[in-house]
Image (cartoon, rainbow, N blue to C red; front, side, top):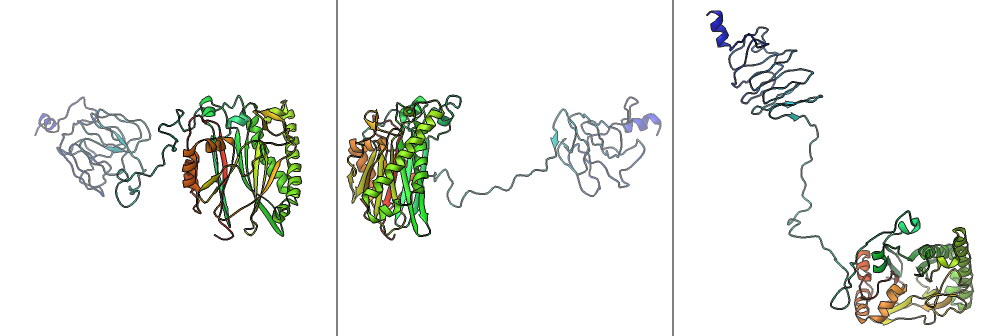
Length: 447
């Protein structure tokens, strides 16, 4: 065979930098693994069948180990540290077998492009899918949802029952960091507690802070016992610009100073109403003085921090059935007993004899210097509701709310926290103030 015939058989052309063009036939090679496909090449093969230092290769086969780039008619396969562009395929530094129709799998530390498909090696693999649970698909069994709170009458109030606009940090940091909703609770032998505070519709709409506050904590106690559960609600006076600070500070300071009292628990245990009154008045004076000092430190008048405060003290000894109550200003202290509401068990708590009138005849800290006090006797099955007027006003004014909450809270079964919050938000038109309450379930000496 002469030179021209040999060149024609190999498709050799003088202008081809490698002296040949490989045809588009398939190849299967032995290199420790197999690779197959139309127009696919497998490189780095040390077997004698395909390693050749001459430009002569069998028709339909391309297998080389070469340190220079090679371009083929639809196929390229090289070991190279630099990018290479092929006619429809790019393949760079591939130490493992690959297969596909004109596609190569690469490990490439530099950019690569081709007139076709290029895929990069990815060692990350997704874990096997896991079903959420045995049984029907979730779309057939949706997760239960309580939805919007119930409401009185045929139509709900116009404001949406969800958090709305927020105060800005630049305007008032203390207001900006107050949560829209607070949910709390506790349980001890003989008693259970649920508590919630929700920003009112009007404050949500205006982007103003929640001015109410609550506190559920444990105070007192020594080696002889004497611990008390302190339940408190405070209602910042609406016209006072820093009342949201005053209400929270009043709760904190009350816990601080009531915790230090050495006679409080004994006065409640023995039913000594006069001793309890003196202790409560001392604490109210201390709270008032410190709130006034705080206002002056911020360059404000004391009235800027004006707030009401209502506290119920519950001995943790289940044998003691007396509860201590003290209050400055308005609010509610309702009792649910055997399915019937008693809306004001401390009738003259709003008529504080020595307190200054600040807003709509409301006695308030920090100017108040005394508290209205009561010692209350608890009975098994009682539900006592200590609240701001955001709850006490609609409870007194709407029969639908009284019926709804009586059904929800009556009896020994205490609602779960999320259920309590949903029940507590029962809506009544025209009542859009902040709403706060601490609810005490009395179970008796042993549950």
